Structure formats: C-alpha cells, structure tokens
Length: 160
Image (cartoon, rainbow, N blue to C red; front, side, top):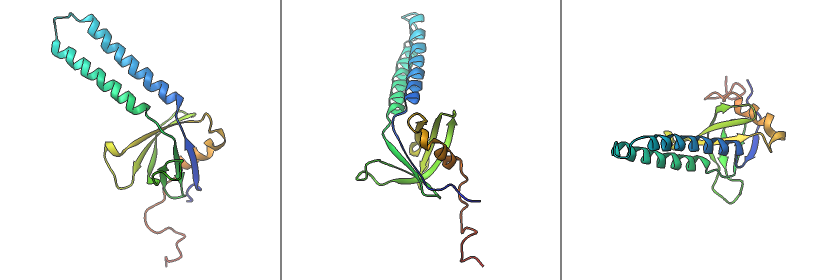
C-alpha cells in the first residue's frame, strides 16, 4: 500500500479554536463565580480559596491554549515534521501527527515529537479550512493516510 505523497501546509491562528477556548473558559469562570456568589460569606473559606485557585488554573490553561504561532506542517511521504515558516528559525521537528478531533472544516491535531513522550511533549495544533481551501483535501488525505510499516519496504531491492 502506498503512503501519501509529500505535503506541506502553513497554518496560522485558528479563529474557531480561539472562540471555543474563550467560551469554555468564560463559562467555567461564570459557573465558579455563581457558586461563590450563592454561598454564604462566612462559610467554606477553604472552598472559596479552592475555587479561586481553580479560576486561576482555568485562566492559565486558556491562555496556554490560545497561544498559537504560525507553523508549517510537512510530510515527506513517510513522516511528519513541524517547523517555523521562517527559514532561519528553529529546524523542523520530526514526529507523529494524529487527528484528535475532526469536524469537517476543523481539525484538532496531536503532534508528538520523535524521542519524547508524556503529556508535556504533546503539541495541540488546531487547523480550520478557512484560508486553506485549495490545500485542504490533499492535507486531509495526508493526515489520514496509513503510516509506513517499520522495517524494509516491499519495494526494497535488497530483499531476496
């Protein structure tokens, strides 16, 4: 089975992602504020401190998810790499790109760099079709194409 042909796509800020993150953060903060307003002032000082800490955590998480920079996603036919659109910037990082959420015109991708593991290594990349209409179909084909099997390929002339 053949893999996808080489593919390259430049992505920037995703408005749908930004809107969704802000909406979820504001909703969470509003729920916590409503709970604080409805509880008596003298009761549950520890719970109030916990809600305040949770509110700060929600704000920090939302800020980290909103932080997005322009990226270039490349597939050389066998593996993915993520790099900067500026040639003089940091070299592209190879890794595995998986679809976490597919809404047709919006993809949330999970990029795990080679040689790194754990939740801290994962990079979430939101991409929307707006502005990428010409490349969208080919990109989706590349994202969903099968990964090459490990080891020598069937077309390897060194095989007996």
